[in-house]
Image (cartoon, rainbow, N blue to C red):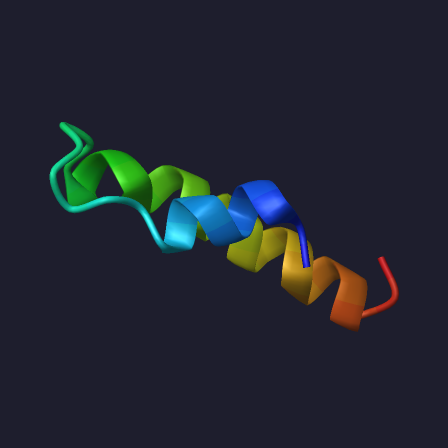
Length: 40
């Protein structure tokens, strides 16, 4: 697992990044994961 992805998933709630700001990155990570599962 990518450490940066883990850090994003475990983001400090006190940070100023809102869930809405996190959404595009999470969708991208999910899409990349699905691409890998499908053999790219």
